[in-house]
Length: 456
Image (cartoon, rainbow, N blue to C red; front, top):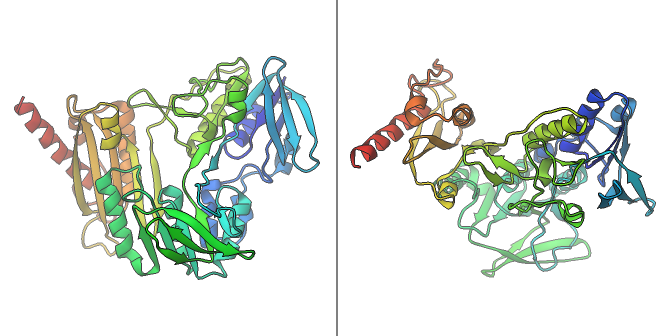
């Protein structure tokens, strides 16, 4: 058995390790255009921030570790073309500039996603960075440690994580977001609250410009010096970080007539199989099933990539395993503010034609006399006609994420608000008020649902 894996960060490395355990005698070759494999890309902002000095702490396993187990790692080798009819892949060695064909019995595509580079004039100036690979994190940290001003383009998850990282490196940051508010994956009311709370936290160390677009970078041979916006603002900078989102790498899949899903990522079934026999795909290049609605979603997260890599490997090795889908669960932090969500937002539900009802509460995350008490805001969402829970969003300096995590299991179980309200949640003064804020939200939501039922 010859297994070829394309890509080696989360999904690809996971697939390689699992395949080796499944088939000790198989020939396993992993090809990646990267200079590293098996690393935590999610940890790059925290390396930039200065939480630890050695970037090698981000590396989960080295090529040498894999080689000791008989997995052959080919760094700086890019997959250029897949030839399904002959079961071959054309590989380009980025160092020698030579191309060669490799044969496979089973192929696992885990080529991930790449940062979006917006169409900004002079975007190729020196010291304009994206953040995706180890080298990106190293270069940005080196610039941050010797700079005073920076701009971040984009106010999503990566953008606000980089905001925290650079502020903590004593860089004054201007974050530019074209939308009316940041963190657009949340409902607008929660997004506005995130913006307000961030500004309240330490707004004198950064500026967030919303409904604004970067149109031009100015500079010289030494690098970018300023950012111009559509409204005419001129912002002096020492460097810029582009955080405008990512897109799945699907070009070689399309070229091989591998089916692309409605989200623009590779289409796979529960076994991570593509439409072509013996070709599997996993990680940030594939779309997932949104369990609540059985619709498709593209959610490029490390948790999903690891699970999918494992499933792809098991099935490529002759096993039978399924990855059923995701709930859309996510969490991040910026300057002591936690932001977490799971399931559907109101706006996403409306896009899918689902009528919703919601309740939002702001409460202490623990008993008020505890020294580390903080506020959290929770938004609980339900289907107006069935009463089933659809999602939860939580933000605040307190433990918002653990409340959201509680809801995830309830979404999987398909609980109604009434059933969820019966939850026997833990209580002690350092952890929660006597009635948890999550149950406060559920109670309000249940009252709303009952009132709606009475009005029918």
